[in-house]
Image (cartoon, rainbow, N blue to C red; front, side, top):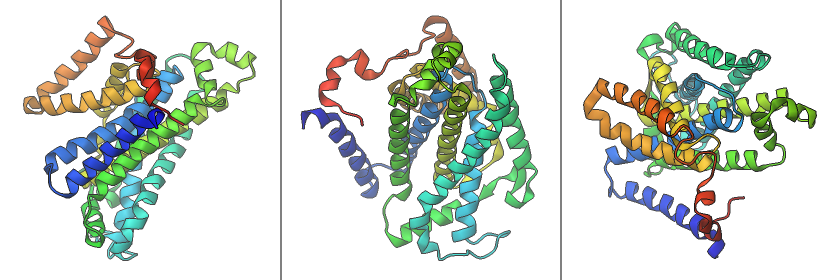
Amino acid sequence: MQKYAINIAFFAGCLLIVLAAQFGMVDLYVQSVIMFMGINIILSSSLNIVNGYMGEFSCGHAAFMCVGAYVSSVITVVLFAQNKIFGAPILPPDMAVFFMPLAILAGGVVAALVGILVAVPSFKTRGDYLAIITIAVNYMVISGIENLEIIGGSRGFMGMKQVVYAMGDVVDIPWMMIWTILGTVFTIWIIRRFVSSTYGKGISAICQDEIAAEIMSVNTNKMKLVAFMLSSGLAGVAGGLFAHVIGYVNPQSFNILKSTECMVMVYLGGMGSLSGSVLSAVLFTLLLEALRPLQIVKWVIIPLILVLLMQFRPEGILGNKELSDVFPRLKRYFRFK
């Protein structure tokens, strides 16, 4: 029992958050901040696969989030909501309860496929070309969606709130809070399993020395594709959750500033540290909310934080260590399989 003390405390904490939201003990603003923390944890930990564990440099992570957000939103709105363009819902809105996680996963799958399209030409090159290509893809995705009038173009796409309300009509519980927590736990679990597996350790080998990894029979091209696809897919899951929490998406919500946010979280927490990504996502979300009254000025302060971080602690808060490496006694109360 002692070995699972932190696991039990974590799930008890998640249950407490859901119950607090259900019985109105926390207002909608606090609920939104908690859900944004979960979404940012998914974003930072997924980008850490590429930038941290694999040692490559991707700068356009928001593009995959955008793909996941739009794909899952279009699926749920077409199936379960009345829309001016798509007309009446195809299925009874009550069924959204069962199909919502599938729609979020579908967004992740499409984002992963887009990730493959980016990764195939990118990883034929070496050096910083991945950074340039991902920035270009970020602009291409936004520009493409802005010219798709059927999903609102530059005005954005809405209707997801109807789907969320339809789930609440079936059983009145905070559905999006539940899906966000489950999505966050799923992301942490799958990344932990991937990077600690024998197969996944190939990306750490690539990070240390790609040529040596090839000599040791690691299929480096395949490993890069798998890691980038996983990273992109999880960003798509974050996008799907984000779209349904907000109830509205606009292409400019996923511009280069959003990609910069992702990178700040990764470098703040530490490259190649999953617990560092979780910690930085929580701190960064709180920082964004604290700076919200400053409006546009916060976009001077946040890049400044990144510059100061690179100057005085380039390895981030935890470096490439996990929290249990910094505090070894935690291993007595913690098991992650």
